[in-house]
Image (cartoon, rainbow, N blue to C red; front, side, top):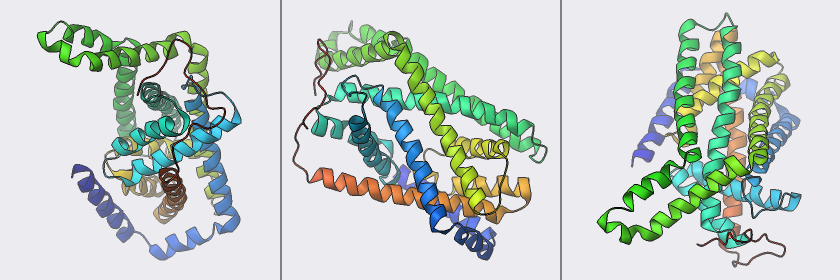
Length: 340
């Protein structure tokens, strides 16, 4: 119910933003992208999606580092991300779907899949902090942005960084296992034995990735940062195609603001309304053309709809496909047999 309420809030915010805009100007800007522009935007977004999938691939010991597995994981991510946006439960629908598909189609156990998804989210957010830190520096060098706007962005980044580094510290410091050992001393702990075993196993996987596989961790973090840079390049390309070119510094600052708002509006499905509102505000501040900001936001929303449709189509196909371990599927590393 809370998620549905958040969706209605997002729709109301989107309606308010649209009501304040010159819709004729918005439509004129959007239609200027053309077919080649649409294809270019989709291609850039696909590149970002592949890079992000490659980052996740490094976190799955059972997945070989080859093109075949990259494409498998890209499709699984497409299904999960589509569900993250359209299902009222948000990530409670998309992330378990990814784990379920990995188990059903490729024999990767839930523990390994679950740990990889948590690590992937952490690495992605760590890279976002690095990206937004550079963007914030560019914001402070932009005189057209108000002090209130820049201060709000800095505060938002600070809160995000505090939460993400805390989440990383919990994983790296095996906090869950420490808590499990305390619980194990209680009289009723025997009933939780299997649950506590899961906690220790997942913590072992965190420690292995952050400690024993530091090279993979560094590469995954680098790829996640490249993903954010490609998203910024998509914004730059959209405005170039629309005949409204901006500098790379401006694109970085705009993308930083957009991503900070998306992170803060995580409770709204797809950050609906919030993403559009921040684009209107920042374009109004930079060039006095809020309609252009809304046009850019709607173009990006359009490619998101295409991606959702693809992900849902894949999900439907997988749901009617008999479960079978494909030829050449990876097996858990020796001594690390996974359990459902």
